[in-house]
Amino acid sequence: MVKVCAFNACAGQARRRTERAMILTWICFYDVIIAVVAIAAGIAAAHFELIAPFSGFQLMLAGLAFAALGLVCGLIAVPMTLFSAKRRPARGRALISTFVCVGLLVPIIRG
Image (cartoon, rainbow, N blue to C red; front, side, top):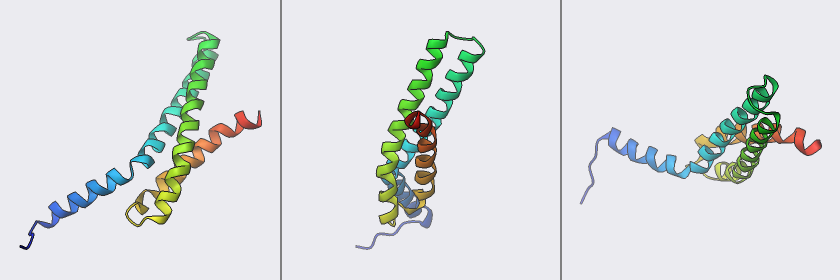
């Protein structure tokens, strides 16, 4: 039996499989976005006295926790995208997300 499908339908199935395979890259990407927003919001809100300084510090620490989680996900996602042809389109997103996480964590580690 020959399976016949429209070109767009087959392309859609392949795209969904690839998106599922790259879920770790997406998690890393969204962790970076959450981390940057939380760190910036914590620092800005505490500076302009919109919230208590300690609450701003806690919000910044939550952002740093997301950055650490993004770094762990990125360290797993980058080798996965390097060695798999199916995951190769996500390599740029994984590398950028990992470098941003490192950039957010370096001032705290060097502290």
